[in-house]
Image (cartoon, rainbow, N blue to C red; front, side, top):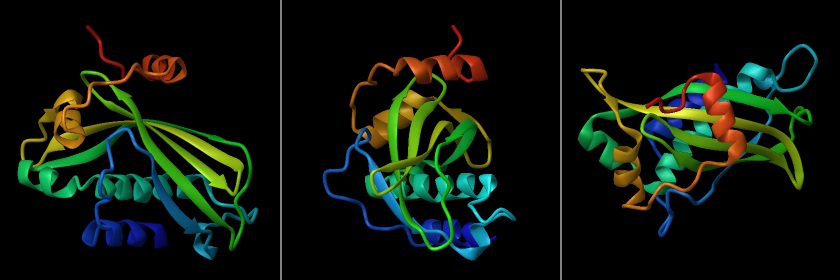
Length: 176
């Protein structure tokens, strides 16, 4: 529940856009593990990682200055698929970063990587396939259109092989 409130705050009062931030640039969200984040084994609950990733993606959009453009068009983001690989536990009071970056897009979705680090240590890595929908109609917005608006015309980079394989196996990759 506490991370849902964190997300609400990030949406209601987004952090200021970072001058010069591009769609392919990483966005860093720093957090600290709170008591409500823990499971009975005293490390961050796997479901809480997903909520933390939501907050970090919201900060990523804020860093781009993307909220005004999304509001004007009636767009909102949704997750089509995500996978998290865990390497090291995060425990009470530990400070960590979530580095969010877009790694590419196809006709259907935008692919993001979200990496949890504690200092130099890799704690978890998430892959996310995100879509944008239009309020009211629920109509899907093609990923290249979103990338054009948020990325100011930057061409799609080649998708990393592991992400392309993941997208295909998850059934979210563009199908001809």
